[in-house]
Structure formats: C-alpha cells, structure tokens
Image 1 (cartoon, helix red, strand yellow):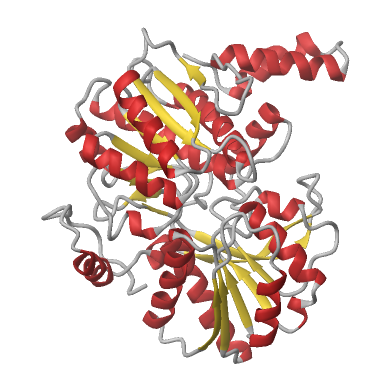
Image 2 (cartoon, rainbow, N blue to C red; image 1 turned 180 degrees about the vertical axis):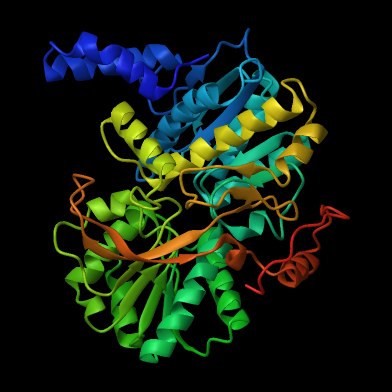
Length: 465
C-alpha cells in the first residue's frame, strides 16, 4: 500500500535539495500523481481515478463532486482529502487489514439528473460497493434515493441538509460531516448566550432557495425554540443558488432592521453576498452569522487584511482549530500535496474514506452490506476536527456523525497565507449538546411518513439540545 505523505516527503527531501523551486514543485506533482495513480482530466467532466487498479481492488468507491464552476474548489479539495486518507489508512491500520481501495470521481455539475445517471453507471458498469461525496444537498437527495433503491451504501461527505438523516433516513445512507442541525444547534446556543449579554430581539435569515437553505432555517427555528429563545423574525429571504447580484436582498435586509442576520449562503455565494453587504454598509447596524459554512478557508482568504466588524462564523472544519497534532498533520499534509490550505470539503472527504476503510478493515474486505452497516453504526473515528480527549462517532439512530463544533470571530492571523484573517476567540460546544432531541427526530419522521427506521436501536442519553 501507499507510504504516509510525511514518510514519502522525507524520503524525497534529500534528492530534491539541489533542484530549483520550480523544478521541485513540478516533480513533486508528477511524483504524487504517480504515487496515487491519479489521472487528471482534460475536461471537467472526465473521470478521475486513483488508488489501486480494478483488478486488485477490494472495493471500488464511486464519488461525485462538482469539478467546474463556483463550487469546483470543493471537488478539487475533496480529491486531495481522499488521497491523504488512503495514505493515513496505510499508515494506521494493521498490516494485512488495510483494504485496497479504488476511487472513481466524476463531475456531477451540481445537477441531480447528472448525479443520478453517474450513480447508476457506477453501480452497473463499475460495480462500486460504495457511493461517496456530493456537495449540494439537493443533488445528495437524488443520489440517496439511488442508494436506497439499489441498496448500495452511500457515505455523504459534504452536503448538510438534516432531512437526509431525519425525514429521508434510510439504512444505506451515512454522513461524516456536520449537518444543518449540528451547526444550527451550535448557533442557537451562541445566540441564546448573546441575547443574555446584549438583549438582541430582531432576527433575519437569508439562504439559498433549495432544500439546504430551507432546512437550515427550520433547524435554526427549532433549535431556538428548544432553548426558549424569544425573538422576532423580521425577514427570511431566498435567493437562487449561484445568484450573482444580492443588491435587492441587501436592501430588504437593511429595511428589516434586524439585530442579527443569519445566513445559509455558502461558498462563492456567501463570498459574493458578504462583499456586497460590506460595501452597502449592511453590517454597520446588524451582526451577520453563518454557523455552517461561513468560516471556510476560501471565505477568510477573500476578506483582505482588515477584520470586518460584526461577523460570527463557523464551518465544518478549521485549519487552526482544534490545535491538535492530528489537525496540524492533516492541514500540513494537504498543503504539501496541493501547495495551498484546504477548505472544509477536504476534511469531509478524508473522513469518508477513513470511515469506509476502517469499516472494511473491521468487517472484512469482502463483508456484505449488512455487516458493513452494523460496523458503521456507532463507529468511532479519530478525525482532524476532534479536540483532544474527544472522538467522533456515528449515531446509529440517524447515521449522522456526532462532533464538537466551534464558533469564532474574525481576527488577524497570517499563519495561513494568502489569508490574512482567520477565526479566533472560539466558543466551543460539545458534540453531545448538538444532537437533535430524539422526540424531534421521531416527530419529523412521523410527519414525513418515514418508514425505514431502525427498531430497537439504543444509544447513550443526550442533552435536550
């Protein structure tokens, strides 16, 4: 199997010492491509394949990510994260138990119809044992339906709508990154504490007009209700995904005069909205919070050198939190491989391959789906975003990973260039505080008519929020 990234770099450092920086960088990319069997596409829609060959694979994994357009950075970072996971599995799993994985990636173009076709082809043509990835929650719902119908395990690594693990739950779907409930539960706790300090009352929301945005709003409202946070909703706005101009929405937000604006815009959409909001003076009288995606590295790198006032941000992974050896290793390995720092998508994809690899190592390389599902339910994983003394685990009731979350404020920090700002002054919430209450899960499933639940599942007691 593959050596660890750190071992490989140490072995090649001496040989590269007398070469020019340009030549070293070029040869580094060639060597890494050879190491991982990576073939880069000539066009965005071409297939990317790495890992072992089809003939020697214990399992083939079919992944879908956007590889062009506004969200393409998440596809590229996910590929790099998966490569790092292959190396870490080889270094961490006992010799003889490391599964030989073949990974296929295709561009889903952020379209449900395209992703559905790709998923079916992965199953029919490539005989994949797992489906993986997906950035858009709307696209993920379509792929999840394929997973349910074809009874192929799907490991979601990026999309976040809690609908997938609550109303639309099925036994073949698992998610290994924080979902909208986790992020909004942390946000609700932050807002509850802020209200006690400054007495805010007026709240507005702006999110993309598809499942992710609407579910994020519902999760926030329900999480605030559990905590008995009294507030007045002055506006909730729904721009389309990839909206280029937020002028009209910003004008409506200014007219609504909220104390707090919560947004579920993400990626390039949030960056565009934030820049236009700052230029329009929206944050002069309102604070802006993005609890799920706003603290992503690409957002912070876009902010320049002066910390904007009034920003409250978090994300599903941070390059500078937690300050653990494992997180530092992951971020540094990614930087050595790609020459830049990762967005949160990289850690989600990394977690997906780690989960699949460890499930196969535990259940057996040729274990059937039922055994793999039993292993994944309740699996404990040590991941880069786990603070010291904590370990992520998969909730058997929802198949959603359970993790701590930190919310921060923008501060000057030049350690992750080209970003000049990062998050700091953290407020950290324990994983157990952020799970949805069981009665809420069952109520939402009952209202949706969900039937694919797990009878008899037991899990540890949790907080009321």
